[in-house]
Image 1: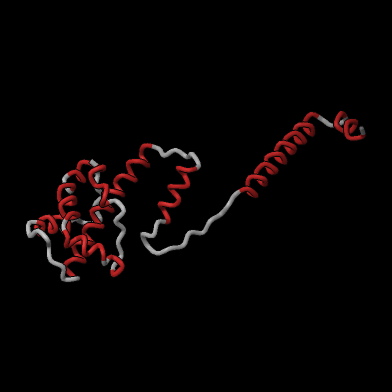
Image 2: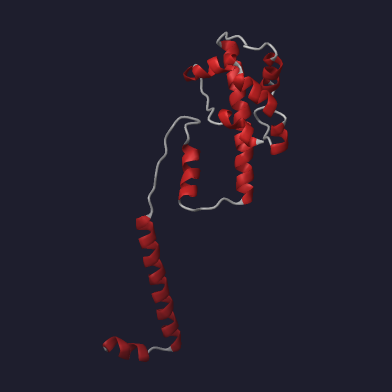
Length: 166
C-alpha cells in the first residue's frame, strides 16, 4: 500500500522513468532466462571431419530454414568438393602406382586433375564434369585408391550420388 501512495506522488517524468526501468528489468530477466537455456558446443576435429555438416544438420533438425542464397552457396560447395575429392583420388591413384582399369579414363582423370581448386563451380559448370566423375568413380583404379583413403585425406560421401546432382 505504501508503494501505491509513493507512485501517486511521483511526477510524470519520474513515472515514465519507473515504467522504463520496469520494462528494462523485464527484458533483462527474459534475456537471462534465454542465456541459461543456451547450450554451447565446442566442435573439434581435423579438416573435413564434418564439423560444418553437423551445424547444418542442427539447423535442419531444429527447423531453421535456409535462405535461397545459402542453398546456392551450399550447392557450389558440394559441387567443388566432389570435383576436389575426385582430384585427390586421381592424384592418389598415381602416387600409389595403381593402374587405370580403362585406359580411356586417363583423359578424364587429366580433365579432373586440371581443375583449379580455387574455382567455385555453379550448377552449369558442374554438369560438364559429371560424365568424367561417373566414369572415373566406376574405374577399379579409382576404387582401389578409395579403399586406401586412410593413407590420404579424403571425403567422398557424394560420389555414389553424383547422378542426383544433375
